Image 1: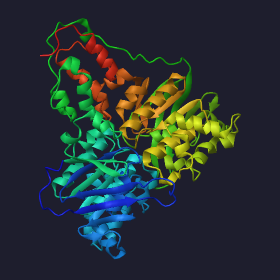
Image 2: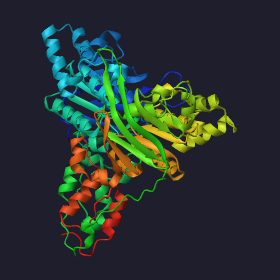
Image 3: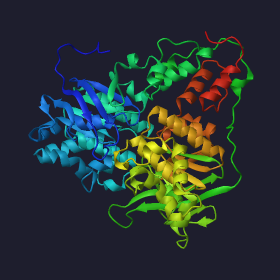
Image 4: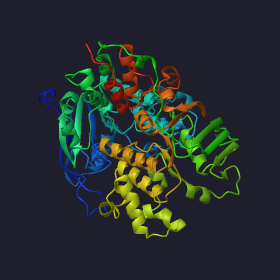
Length: 589
C-alpha cells in the first residue's frame, strides 16, 4: 500500500532491517525485529500500534538517541551509528519526548526554548524571534517567565514542542506529544503539525488516538517490532477485524457508523473524521413522538454519604516568591461514596493540584479538605494514614516508582503497611486486575516498559494497597486502544464493587463511560458541577471552558436537529442505541 509515494524519491530517513533490544532485557525478545521503513521528504506520518510494539524505540533510533544492534538507520545519507555524524543528524531531526520533562533544561520557560537556538550560535535578535514565535505557536506566551517544573503535564508538553520548533529542524518526531493535552490543546497541536508539514517540514508522530492518525497522509502500523501496515488512513482503517489484530480500533466516527448502521443506514465509505460523520447523519422520516421533548437522567446511582468535601480551597505554588502561581482559588467540591466524580478542564486548570490535596501530598493553605473522617488541614493527621485510605495514580506514572523490577514495585506499598496474605498473592491480584500477566511481567525492568505498561504498573501498585478511595490522574493516557478499553473495563469493575473514584481526564468518552457526576475546572476553581448528562449537554458552557462533549453527545444533538425523537442527556453509545431502538418505525430518509 505505497501508491501515494513518489517514484525514485530518495528517503529522508531510512530504517533498513533494524533490530534492537534494551540492555538488561536478555530474557525478553527484541523490541524491533527486522524493521524496515522509509520516511520521504514532506511526509506526514502517523505511527500507531499496541503498547510495546516498538514505536518510541523506532523514533529514538531515527535521531540517533539509540543505535541499532542490527541493520542501519540513515538520515539524509548520514549513519546514526557514526558518532561524528550525530550532531548533523540531530540538527535535522527534532524529537518531542513521550515524557517532555526529560528534555527541559532551564529555569524559566523562555530560557528553555532559547537553549537550542543558542547552541546553534544564532544572534540574540534571531533567538528572541524564534522563542516568541515558538511560544505563540503552542499557546504558551503568557507563561514565558514561569518555572518549567511548576507547569502542568500538558503545559510541559507544549514547552517541549516549542523548544523543538525553535530549532527549525527538517524533520520533527512527536512521541505521543498530545497525550496530556486537553481537547482544544490536542487539536491545536495537530493543526500545528499540519501547518509545519504544509510549509515543507517532514512530520512523524506517534499517537494512540485513531482520530488523530486519520489527519496524517500516511499511517504506519507497528506490530511486534515490525511494520504491519503502511498506507493512507482510508487504506489502513478499512477493516475493524484487521486493525483489531494489532490491538487497535477504528476511529470513533467509523465505530459509531458501524454501531448505528441498523438505524442510520450503511455509510460507505466509513466516515473517518467527526465532522464528516455529523454531516452525513440522515433526516428522520418517521412518526414524531414525545421523546424529542424529554430528557434522560443519568442512570448512575451513588451513595448518599459525602466521602470527600472541599470548601474554599486555595493553593499557591512558590508562595511569596517572584515565581508565585495561584493554582487553586475558592474551590468547592463534593464526592459521594461509591460514585465516580469526573474532573475536566483545560490543561493547567488545577485538577492535578486538587488530587494531590485529596491524598495529603499537599495540605490546604486556605480552606478545608475532608476525606472520610480526616480533616487534612490538621497537620496532626499523618499523610501515611491518609495514603492507606486514598490511593493516587499520578499523571506521569514513573514519578511514583521506587523499585527496579515490576513485582518489587507493586509490592512496595503492601510491604510498608503490612498485609495478612502473602505479598505474591497481593501482587498477582493487583496485576491481574489491570491486565498484566504475573509471570510475564513480575521480573521485567520498570525502566524498559512502554509508556502504557508503566501506567498499568502504577495502577496495580496503587490498587495493591486496596484503598477505599482511588484518585486517577489521566489513567488511560498512553494506552493503546485495546489496553484502553481493558483498563476502562477494570475501573468499571472497581466501581461495581463500590470503590469511590475521582477521575481526572482529557478523554471525554472515558468520563462519559465512568463518571456519575462531573466537575468543570477553569482558572483553579470549579465553575460547574452536576450529573454527567447535564454537564455534557451544556454545549455553550463547555465551549467557554475550552472543552467539547463526546462525539456520541454531539451525534445525539445533531439527530435531534434532524427530527429524530432522541431525548437529551444521552452520553454513551449504549444509551444512544436504546434511544434509536425506541424510535417509531419509519427511519431515515
